[in-house]
Structure formats: structure tokens, C-alpha cells
Length: 255
Image (cartoon, rainbow, N blue to C red; front, side, top):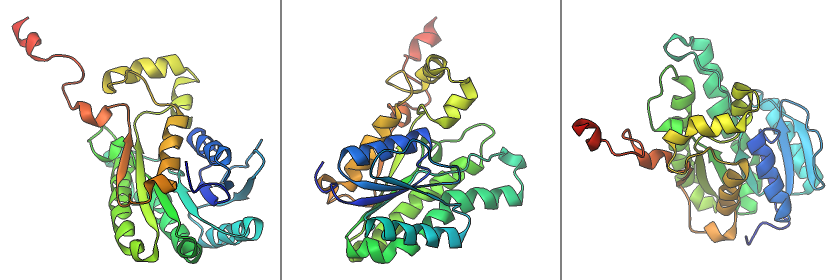
């Protein structure tokens, strides 16, 4: 994709499975990457630096931007992979609601503010991470879906107000993806994950992190130069399916 070589991306959450795929895709395209995470970054490829950063801490976000400029001399892209899965549904406390929004929404906004001068100078791009969870009700889940829905609205607002500065803002909304949380829930069983996901996705499986990363890179590239304020659903047909799933319902009435 055009327009990525020599550019610099900050990827909060870059040590997750999806984050690592995004980082690898940028590196393969000739870009430099600053990975930001609360856990140490190990086995990072050439052209990738690491900075510990808790998105709940403004001082750490400021330090992240400064470290990126010092290391690479510029900032072109923000890719907000990091998120909190904290969610106790209807029983979630005020503190848990604030924690979820602090990580999933507010942290990315503060990062944008800290990097805004660089993004404007370089006519950069921001990619936020929504989710299929932002569009449907899910039993026992309130914090994660609501915060992800807020991210999609944030994306539209950012796109409108940052367009005069030459900054594009878009989102990707993954379906079930072979991610850290899926790995943890199944004890590393990808086949089981695919089997459980199959009825909810037209393509009959979960997505690969690399498939999500490809959408991110497209949105940062020159090929997406006239795209802003939108959301790409990398969801294997999840949101297209609807409640009837991929099987005929009428025959069941006649059985």
C-alpha cells in the first residue's frame, strides 16, 4: 500500500495478538512503530520501539509521544488497539464504568491531543477499534459494548473536527478474532474457538489478527485518502447475518 514507508505509528496495545499483527504489517510496509503497552514488549522486530504506557495516566501519554518523536522524529498514525474487557453487566459499579471508559475511550482522546501537532504537520491518520459488540445487545455485557459504541461516535466526531487539519479518522470493528481473550477463554484451542464462532459468522470461523491488521493498514495508506469518519467491519459477516443466522427459518415452521 502506498504512503506507509518511512512513516511512524504509535500502537497502544501493541503487545496483544491483534496489536502484534498490526505492528508486523506496518513493519512489512516499511513503517516504524512505537509499541505502547502496560506489559513489557518482547521479541520486537527491527524498526519497533517499546514504551511502557498506561492510558489512564496523562503524564505517561505525554512521555509516550515525546519518546516517539525522540526515537523516530515524527508521528503519522495512531492505532488504538488497547482496551479493557472489564464488564460485570448490570452489576457493574460506578468505578468499573469509569475504568472501562477511561481505558477504552478517554485514553485514546488524550493520546490524540498529545500527538495532534505531529499528526497535523504530517497529515496523519487515526484508526480506532470498535467492535461488533457496539451494534448488538449481548447477555451479561454492558461496559464493553457501550464503550465500543462510544468509540464509533467518537470516530465520527474526530473525523469532522480534524478534517480541516488534514487528519483522517476511521475505525475497524472486528468480529470474533483469534485474540488474547479468545486464547485465554479456550486455553489456546483455536479449533474450539472456530467451532463456537461458526454459527455467528457467515464465513464459519473467527478472524485472524492479520486480517484485522490489513484493514488498519489500508485505512492508514494513501489508498484510503478519501475515506474518513467510517468503520470497516472485519467481522466475517457477523453484522450482516442478523438473528436468523445462516440457516433457513421457515422450514422449521413446517417440520
